[in-house]
Image (cartoon, rainbow, N blue to C red):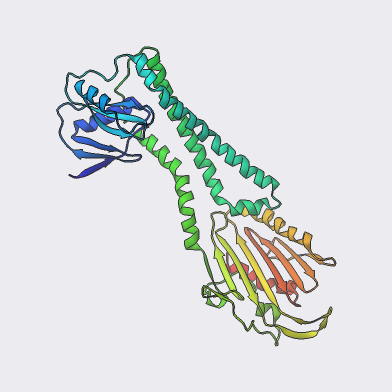
Length: 397
């Protein structure tokens, strides 16, 4: 028999609205087969007396006991489905059957266990986003590199609001059930009819908006995987924001490293890796290594093995670029004694800093939402390569 799937139009804890919805579907010929967490399963079947009721479970039942089922059958009700270990759904079998509960006060007591469980879950759900926020904030405050930490954990920026919306939803459900329980405890009879269509589009829009951050958290690793790659530099066909080592050296005796260190068809001696994240849509790490060669005696070093490591960030939020640049400069705290640090000026960059130590140089540059760091081992002067670097960075955005 063909199965038909339906999405509940309201919270399952809005009992009057849910009972009205189920009864309307039964009138239209949809026979309830299964109450799922998301979609409900129905089949086509005509019934002469369409009427369904929801009853809170005790001790997380998934079905009524044989004694209860037999008693309800004698009263004109049959078991239809169990809803998330929270409700048993009953279907009326004859028109003269009375309601499941005639005493509102006793009926309210049946909700006590479910209400306590829901209240406990709501408290945990409401506290969780603030715990996550506090942990993330402490991490940022205590970390020596808070901007780098923020850029490296974009999922937290989605997870915290997602958990906050989930907490609000859990609290709303608990208050809804509490309101029903109090009405019954005050002796008022249960209401079994409610317009579930009113505000349906708004509720579904809010639900979709609340689900979007969770969906993004789930698919973010897949997007990162699809957008990221690692290749040998010579295999990259797009322009990259870096200075090739042979351009830096510009020496007749320069040659690339003769050996190869292959891993996954990538030569790690001359490799480029690109990664993606929502806050850093373009991030390159490029490593190049030349061959050892003899040079004229310079500061007690008769030979060199030139190499360059470049790290480039293109940020989605340009205002974070300067704080990231300043964090990059913290690397200079660990420079060798005698390191010469110079602030340079170039029209293509907002800030440029060059640190020259014995045998190697470090260049830090910032332009708009772009930050670049170069660590170079060799005798060349990186300050003379700023025009070439500016051209490479401009071509990368």
